[in-house]
Image 1: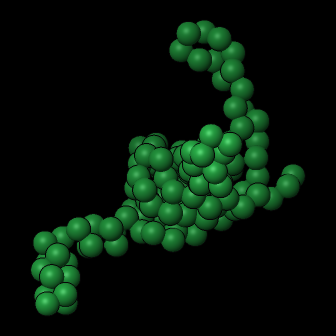
Image 2 (image 1 turned 45 degrees about the vertical axis):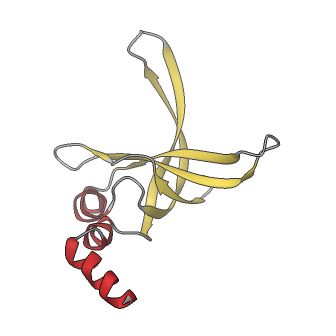
Image 3 (image 1 turned 135 degrees about the vertical axis):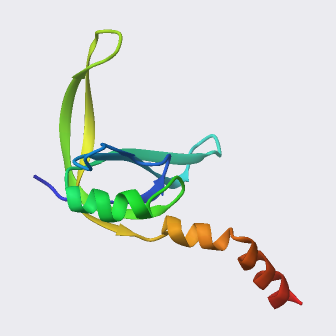
Length: 123
């Protein structure tokens, strides 16, 4: 199996099972500009089966827009869609995760005290 490294921002808040056994999230990354002049966005679905990582890091540190680096391996997954059709998908199974932009830091930056400090610093 090949190891892949993907850096991107979360498209939405992670989906985490109630027992923290599984966490699923999607990373998006800008990869240049297409021929039409629009940003070329690449996305990858990530899944973590590490209960400790899911509970201690993913549930607490990641939210929509947070930036992360994921190291893992691609696996093919087959499933039955709601309409009954058989489908296949690729998922990046997380071996290592580095959070570059923590959700907690974003909350602190959005607090009223942080806004006052920024205004005072500008004055």
